Image (cartoon, rainbow, N blue to C red; front, side, top):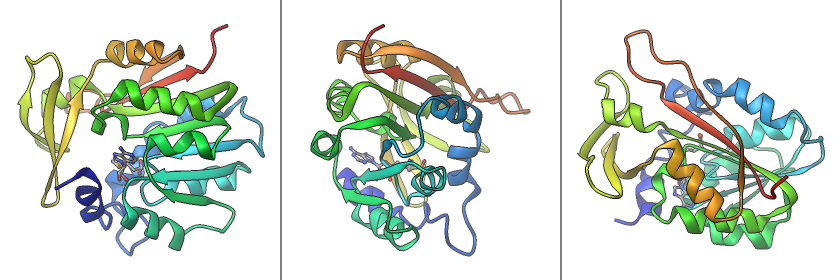
Length: 228
Ligand SMILES: C[S@@+](CC[C@H](N)C(=O)[O-])C[C@H]1O[C@@H](n2cnc3c(N)ncnc32)[C@H](O)[C@@H]1O
């Protein structure tokens, strides 16, 4: 099964608009809201902002309500269908991948929550998103931290088939009846890939660890398209 089909099978799990919204999905925004606020602080309202891997659109809706001109891209047509159903017409959605982003640009900023760890070609992804940004554009990325995946917590997201000694560390994320391929990268690996694509890192941070000792789930990194 290809990635697009796997994610489409999970679209109801990501349907935050249903009668029983999944706490887990909304947590993707909730746990990084301070970092998101810091990132958006100097992005003026009315700026064009891309949400790459927007899923069913919860962050797009939040950005729209903050006055941004929002474009959401996602590889899953079912995710995009739900996003369109639950969004104002001011938000534009596209079924597509990162290579489609440059023709939809230029964007003042791009955000991508919990997507990069599912993409094998990380260099290509950074290059495509950089090409979609305007001069001095900025990118915010949040991913599962490598420590969180390697800790493989029982009470949280479950990971299987963890290969921790390969040059490219991989696992599967078990969600509903799906096993989604996931790539385990350190913050240094993300930063190096971003720099190879021409980004410079602005800052990075992690969410709070869990009270039961489980490591922080969210690694958040902000990059600038241009140096200096
Ligand atoms: C864990 S979900 C996160 C959704 C949303 N960003 C959120 O935080 O609620 C990952 C999303 O990335 C999308 N995705 C995965 N690989 C992708 C790719 N190569 N190009 C575009 N979207 C992708 C999936 O379809 C899915 O909607």
